[in-house]
Length: 230
Image 1 (cartoon, rainbow, N blue to C red):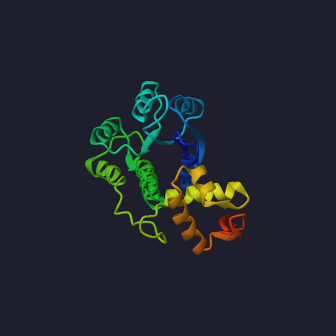
Image 2 (image 1 turned 90 degrees about the vertical axis):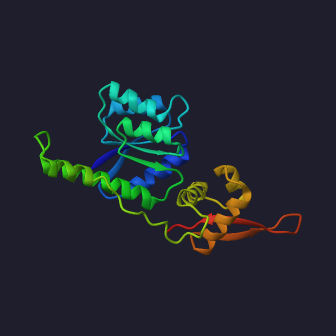
Image 3 (image 1 turned 45 degrees about the horizontal axis):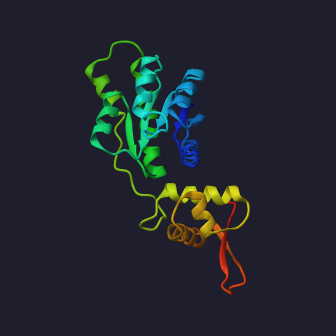
């Protein structure tokens, strides 16, 4: 198994990313971290194979975390998963040895492609022979293992819907254990009410949520949504 540390300052996003990782055969999440200090402590406490690393952390940047890891002798591989899309940050990540750079928001399919190419890289290195000398053909095979093909868009989602946002709403409803209104879902997720309503409507039509009506004093019923266990 490939052990993964998930680092994101947002607890909910970290949980979603961890759920994505758990869906890919051969990978398991060994720890979560929500700051640079926590990430460095986690790697020191229990070395991992791969770090999924956000750049925007409350105490330092993800690039600073990678730099500190290398200074301290931690050899864990790194895939950046972040909203930082400026070229300077991308180039700096490359110079520090990040194997992939995934810009938020992304789909499970996109992350799975990166994880599978990482697993292929590890298998290729093992076949080539570990620490011995490698010819150009073997070197080409190692670098070629990191290439990913075009990643298709998420299946089954309407235009304008993202898989991470869908998973975030599902997580909130699953945890609640009772019906929530669009207003309550918006407050829990940080989305606008109109965006929450749009996603809730799609999820209800797809059979992932059940809809009930709550009548109040105004006479207009409030739509409330409940998680439907698969």
